Image 1 (cartoon, rainbow, N blue to C red):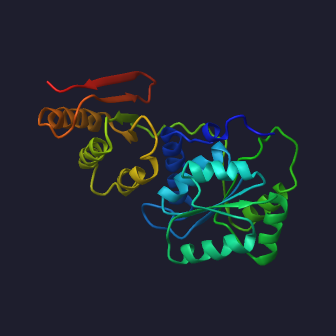
Image 2: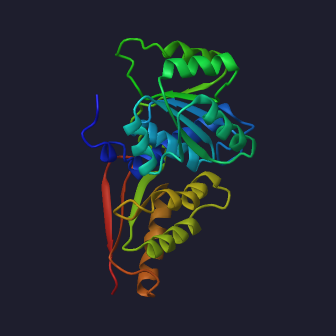
Length: 276
């Protein structure tokens, strides 16, 4: 089945990617205690299908510093992933993907590769060659659908130690005490300045949120509206709003800009930031 508009169908929202990022960082902290304190460097996540959910997971993985292999039989899906920035390279064979990925994993560099082909055959070949992902995800089907041929291979990866990522989780950022905050800007320069001000509100030791702010601009600069998403405590939001207002008054940020958030309780708040 072909989506009518694959470009938009596989364009992941920044909020969805941020929630995936939080999800993966929680897995890293629990299951990979020897990994870097702020990311997935040196780890490989293999995902079946590179549609919308695959694109979300791919972006979250690379922002966290990991490597991603997305397997999909659709050329259109993979081309859409390249266009929306969730896929760095599209290849046609497992050999090609492994050559690229092994080097980046060794150097602990982020990379996303889309591999054209059927998951059942590719995953079976990976097992035969002794290729073991650290994490696996299946965005191709839900648990209510019939068993698919590649599922046995995914289960074997898990039995050998891979962590299964829930690709269908709604994954709202529900960390206790955090609100999901979004700020918008009228230019990339203003957004960079707002990101810098937000960075100042975070504790020096909060490597996970600091990493997101430092990396996200490279992945979402083409998306409109220009915005940034981040989980923040209420007192951080208050300080951030004041910092934005001061920057606008000083001419460091051009209005219009906005700051809005949804609290853990579900209530929505919004501030329009205008130059006085």
